[in-house]
Image 1 (cartoon, rainbow, N blue to C red):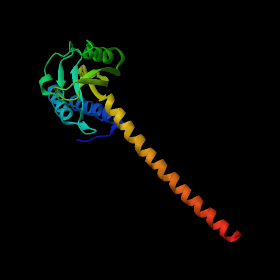
Image 2: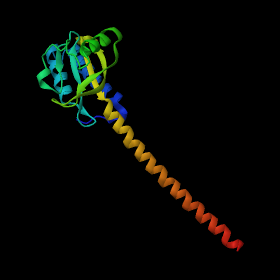
Image 3: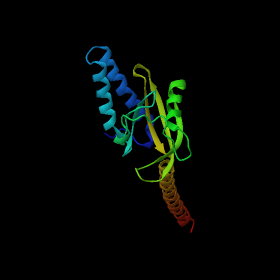
Image 4: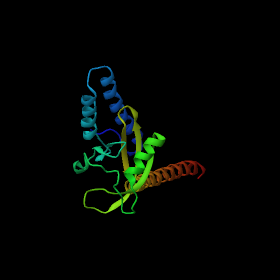
Length: 181
């Protein structure tokens, strides 16, 4: 499911949080048991993608992975997971979610299994009713690449507009100088 592009990550996060809230409401109404509501929410979130391959992940506040694009992590206690700098980033994420409700955490993470870790920033938010943390991240080099593409596009547009303005000025200059001759 494609939700948004990089310029609208907030709507992706809002949608994912809305899915959790909707499942919780179905639990509260008695339509689903807590376990059914949680399983439904996790199944939906595991399939959700935005900006191509970007995904959401969910842990409980103890650091056990509930949903992740890398299926090997699901069910694992990832609270002690460290990046190549030695930072226990999942612990930092759950601390941020517990203490602040939401926030961002920077760390190193490989884009694909078996590749070198690169800078990543993840937005986390606490989902109080079930004691979960919802998160999604963005790789800094992807943001830089998108910025470069936008800069090239704007530069090309600017050059085109300058050329168009020069042509219009030239035509106006010729049309006003002809009668003077």
